[in-house]
Image (cartoon, rainbow, N blue to C red; front, side, top):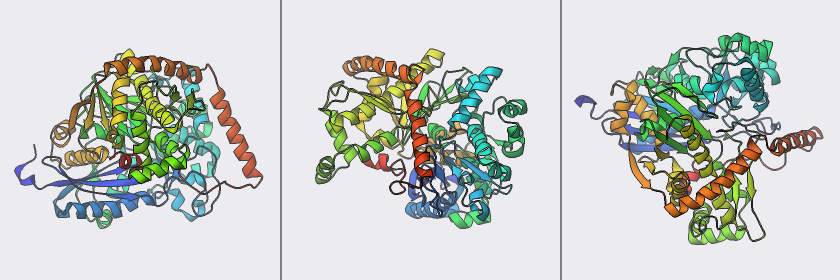
Length: 584
């Protein structure tokens, strides 16, 4: 427990999302959230044209600008302190979390290559966001070679390495822009890069190194394996990746004078080792016991859970010793699109008269569609959707897959499709849960963190579809609170993360329970979802991959002909907190 003289001690947690960063000020002795602030990234997600030059980007690209990340420290942290009305001298530590896998190519001193004038016009010099899926070809080759060679690490990731991860994106960099690759002296997770900026020390965190960096049993893939992929890739680990590993909850260093100037916090306070937004949220809900599957639901969903033993689960994102909590095996799965899908539909699939009615009622279009959809009986809309609009993360691990809605007729209404999309994401989560259960890693409780838990219909659908009690994190800022909990441990206020989580984290148990009639009806629909899932995702049909190839070829031909980019630069997703705000 916190010492008596630490009763006024504070910590700051900073959560880096897809389009914004959020800072929260937390009291160490009880986890009370005293103030918060959000700073939206100036450049957002760069998905169509490169900043400054306007040069078009290929399909499936998603870049970011690293100065947006330091701007969060300069803007959101001081604003959160001001909102809390506290003396920053009481802050004893700061922790951060990031979307992953988000990669920054840098020089040896941590300077992003896109900040160098000679590389400002080179797309590969920019940050590659987790949503950058253009390395699917490299991921396919990594998976095929690992299976052929019988690499022992591949089953730890469910048999698949994702195009989102460090090695696929690194190989893409080498093969698409060898000059930028050669100049890249450090291939850095953004989660670690921001800690580098805060503390002046580059320490790789155990979470991303294990889940996204294929580091198992203290080692990365061998030089021989990498050379077989591409001879020039043989030295990737030694030359660009390998760094000391920091354990979660430990201190990476202390706040530098420069970073103290940015944040208004005292120089010399503890800076916790970096972490991933999903994994850090489990302690915020005090849901770190085996069997508690934590779904961090936002633009995408990441599912994390601790287990007592090492089990290889097909199609998972990985199992890492201490990946969530020291002393336990941390399992990760996920869905690449959830809130993104709902946001996409409200922007592109809803007629103007719906928007007008919603505005007249003073509600968001999400709320209006939810109200209409909630009136339906299960199955009334006659639709089944596949939630692959941003590819499939688990259990197929294939970002060449795409979304699908079956059953539409001339009588189909927007609320029908909207509800079908809500249900599709629940079916995706059930697929993950059933895969865990079948592998011998039982799921006994579903715990939801994030803004989407505000939607009561969505939460009830998830409980009915999974036939599980659904608990909700008390905090609406789970990742930021989780980062603050790790900061408290790094500062020495608690002996370890479980002890801090027991005091600073919390959840409301079984807020939603399955409706037996709805659960039975969803069993029937889930069987249809599974049939489509396996037909399009397990080799029954390759039409989705073929359509992606046709699209890429058509876009390339149009751009080569000088047609330019149609329409303004907009991100493929709503602002980072759109889903949260819609359901409050």
